[in-house]
Length: 222
Image (tube, rainbow, N blue to C red; front, side):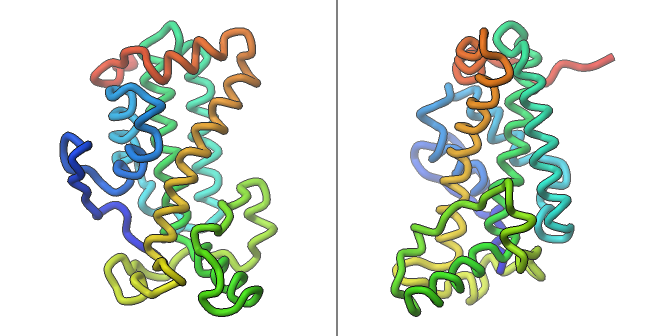
């Protein structure tokens, strides 16, 4: 079962303009962590990620996982001088936004939620569990621990299946909640990787990514 996050729109009072559900999830999850301009860059990058809307939907699970790993490495490499270079700060946040797009779409474009609901139903009985307690995916073991995991066959963003009840929730709401939690986790993981790779300057880098000014557009490479 899949839900099209790309086309959903939010116009909450805290958001200056209408934005995708991807952006709304980032706003809700990371607004207390990043300065507005830095957060907006992440949201913009997430929405503009090249081919990201195809991941976990029209391509294989393996390709989606490779995309996340690649963007994480690009963001981490750019973070090396993000405390001193606005251009590299821009690049690190851009690739982090790309990473968030793919990691959010995993829950909406794969059958992960369905598999977890089936597992919990077999364990506790139909609707006798809280869907908001579903664990986030273990990215290190996703290829081996979820043997039945597959990409979605077709989009069902507004279809009856998306509104199907799971306890006090629905498949759609559950996928969104998982994407929200995943967004926060991805920042925590990224910050941990920065501390590990750049131990002497990690705090300066992390603070710069969160608060230092960013260019309005990416620097041209000649």
